[in-house]
Length: 169
Image (cartoon, rainbow, N blue to C red):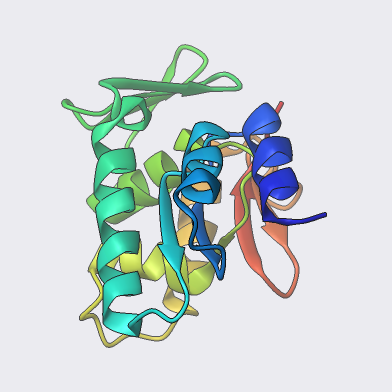
């Protein structure tokens, strides 16, 4: 598969952000890539600083999109973002702000695997100097509050050697 085929296949299944990095510099190639669903198109050679700026721009657009709605629902878990309230079915659960942010991030994209580093960056910011294992402690506390049986989680699942994901039930 070439990049255009990958973009086409991804777009049929997902709204994941796509930035094409390619040696194809013709205007027609750029137009095809963008028409197939790429969020941005960058030709080689490129500056690493420009790539980082473009990634941040795409994430800003994604963050401002529908993914950050007022209410987040996945499985039978509901988050009321403005009120920072969480429910499992009809049962209200009390979460710390960090637990709430972690759960919101996971629930916004059920099934997507997040690394510990990604989760840490999301709740602490890029400048945080913490160990990614801190996330494990927060996940353990979150499961204790969220899950009926924390030892056999139904919602927040571990992807061994990688990180965590919210069940895509």
